[in-house]
Image (cartoon, rainbow, N blue to C red; front, top):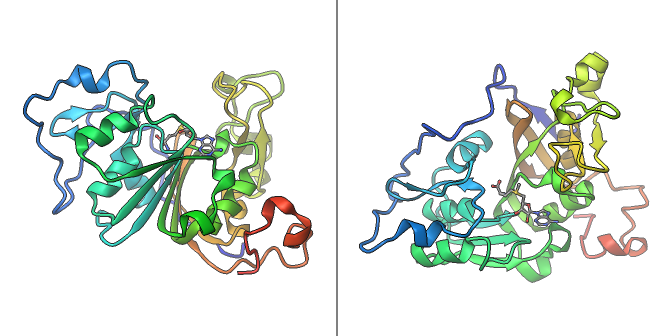
Length: 293
Ligand SMILES: C[S@@+](CC[C@H](N)C(=O)[O-])C[C@H]1O[C@@H](n2cnc3c(N)ncnc32)[C@H](O)[C@@H]1O
C-alpha cells in the first residue's frame, strides 16, 4: 500500500469514558483558574454540549466526547507553538480552544453550526480567546481563501459525509503539514441488511479477507446508531487507502470499540495521473485543487 502505514497499538481498548479522563498538564499552558464571579449555569445552560473539556480548573464542559483523550489517541503534540491550526467540524470548539491553550499561533474553528447557538461564542468570551470561527463545509475549503495549515483536525466528521473522498481531497488542499483523523470504523461493526448497528458483526466474520479490502459501507437511512446524519462507515483499510490516494502518508495510531485514530502527513499526490478526476478542467468540483502538486 503506497503512502500507507499501519501502526497497531495492541488490543482494542473500550470506548473511552469521561469519568477519570486524565488531563495532562501542558507546560506553560496551564488550565486557567476559575475567574471571580464565574457562574457555571450561565456558561452551560441552553446549549447541547457534545464535548468534555476542562474550561477552568475543575470546571468541565458537560458533553461526553473526551477531548484530551482523543487528542492523545491521534498523537497531537503537547506544544503547538508557532503552528497554524484548522479544526474542521469544530462544533462546541473545545478542540480548537485546546490547540490555542497548547500555544498555537493561530486557530480557525470551521464548522456548520451557528457559533452563537453551539456554545462556541460563549466559550470564546469566557476564555478571552482569539480562535476565529468560520462557518462552512469541508467541501468548500479553499487554500486561496484560507491559506494552508500546519495542523488540521478532522475528528468525528468523516462518517457524516456523503462525499468522503471529496472531503479528503479538499482537506489535502489546505494541509501543509499534518492531518489528524478520528472516525467510526466498521471493522467490528458491519451492518447486515435489515439490521441496525446494535446487531452488527465483525467484517472478518463475513470473510477474513475483508479486513484488508477498502470498504465504505453506505447508510441510506438511520441504520448506524439510529442517526440519519451518518452516510458512510469505512473500515480501517478504507481510511488508509482513501486518504493515501488524496496525497497523505497516513498511519493508524489507535483503535478502540468502533472508532479509530489516524495521523497523516502531506506527500506528493500521485494517484490522479491518468484518471478522469485528475483532469481539473473537466471536473469543475475539483477545479482549483491543483491536483498535480
Ligand atoms: C460528531 S460532531 C464532531 C465534533 C467535534 N469534531 C468532536 O469530535 O467533538 C460532527 C461535526 O461535523 C460537522 N460537519 C458535518 N458535516 C460537515 C461538513 N460537510 N463540513 C464541515 N463540518 C461538517 C458538524 O457540523 C459537527 O460539528
